[in-house]
Amino acid sequence: MTSTSFLAPVLQSVLEAVWEAAGCCERIAEDFQKQDHHTKDDASPVTIADYCSQALILQRLADITPDIGVVAEEQGGELRERPDMCARVAAFAQSVDPALTAERIPDLLDRGNHPGGDTGTFWTLDPIDGTKGYLRGGQYAIALALIENGRPVFGVLGCPRYAADDSGRTGVVFYGGESLAAAMVTAPGAKPRAVHVSEALQTCDAKLCESVESGHTSHDRSAQLIEKLGLSKEVVRMDSQAKYAAVAHGAAGVYMRLPVKKGYREKIWDHAAGVAVIQAAGGKVTDLNGKALDFGQGETLKNNRGVLATNGALHPPALAVLKTITPAESAWE
Picture 1 (cartoon, rainbow, N blue to C red):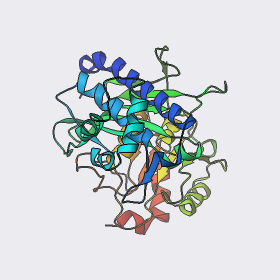
Picture 2: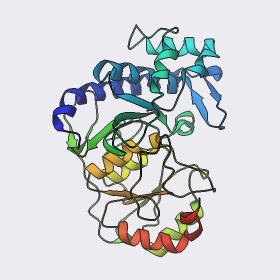
Picture 3: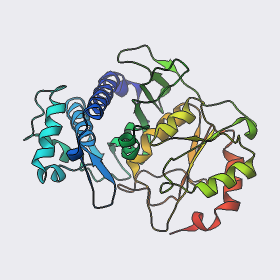
Picture 4: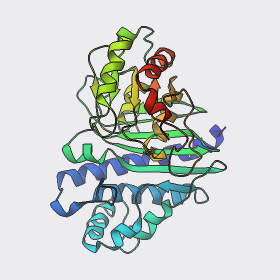
């Protein structure tokens, strides 16, 4: 288990990096231009904010944990082919770190090319989880996790547009791990506040949290789960790993991501930070069959089908219902 002696000296620096990346992403959103995004080969969007966020965080990780590799979503080659876009990335990144020039950024992005694996320690980063949400003005998350022997032992979720209370103020960073209780901070340098999953024991008191995008989960199956489990009819829909944050601090009791097609594999950077935070907050995360998520198989969760995250108490009944409504999906190879 990753010790507090390791996390203590790096925690503040990691939180600062996530806040800096969040601020940069929001500044880009205010000055977004048509040429600031393109579509990757897998049909997913990527923006200059994705690249800027990744560059800022990888630079900080290179400074504080130079010997620990990183599995990150974006690659430098994409920017080498788009010098105008690279120049825009550098212009925003240099507002935080003047050393991040257009010449240096592609190489820095390529520092995120660690292959992962089931032994040793590495970071995994999604610089903007929920890029479609980011583009439409919805939720997104900057998700960073430390993986140790195939387990996410520490995670940070930066949620720039998330409101954790009724104050109307947005912007929260959640963090936690195996040796670090879950907490959130609502401003850079602010005092951490402990977070804990909902204590709801009755399904009727719990809300379901699911993706906005129907391409990310089956909304029809979600409706079946709500009906059969007797969950609240009020569904919390949002983009990104902000859904994990919602479960971690009790705004929702259940989050699930169901397979929508055979052969699809979840990426580790889409879940690792959220899993670490929820588990640190007292919750539970498995796949549809109740198996722990295996983050030691490279870039994907190839040994798992779907994701179920709950406050813990609701996990057994939710799994029981899922087995009746997703028999085919659970067995997909």
